[in-house]
Image (tube, rainbow, N blue to C red; front, top):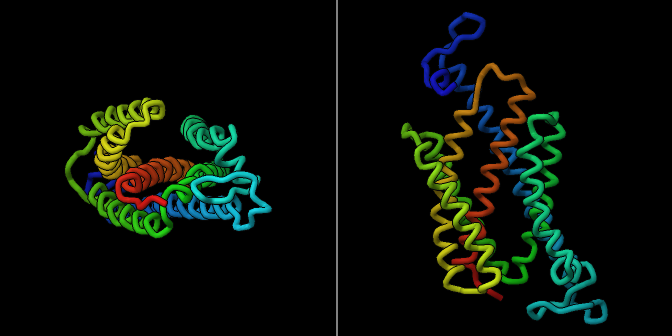
Length: 258
């Protein structure tokens, strides 16, 4: 398939098709990937801000708990202080496994809905960052992440270098920081957290470029619209996760705490 994409001419029904036509289809496919990803990020942002606004109150009479000098509503207590917080934290992970396993059996519209539900759940999970970091630093780190992500993804799209060789090392590094993060839940070491954040920035920077190239090579001009949409959703999921993880790692390093 990659050889098909790299040829100056493709063939459709035995007739040569100029590479420019294939490139036009590729651009439309990649635009669909980025559109899905952008909508997912917007849903996550609105869900996170909305959940936080519902979770805190300035009225002591309406508060049922307190977290970091903030009064929590009943919803905030359930979201941040009750055992339900573990469900909120783990639900996005479950949706990732569900989407990865089932997307090929879904219709394109069902796949979009599942992806957007996942983005909403991720927003609920990320709403706790507003308890820890100032709003100004969250906004600043978001724009830094967006600029870095854009440059890295552009590199992955345009480079002629084959990035597949570094993919296995990046995935191994990803598993390494996941294990270290889980262990640090019990250790509570700021040094371990710092090292994980630094390595995480490097790993997810590499994954952004690698995943962009991999998604580009998934394109096949003869796919029907449903298959193309499902590929685009999976691609958007990969890039979305790269963005969110890069954002949280940078926030851990450069965010100003409340």
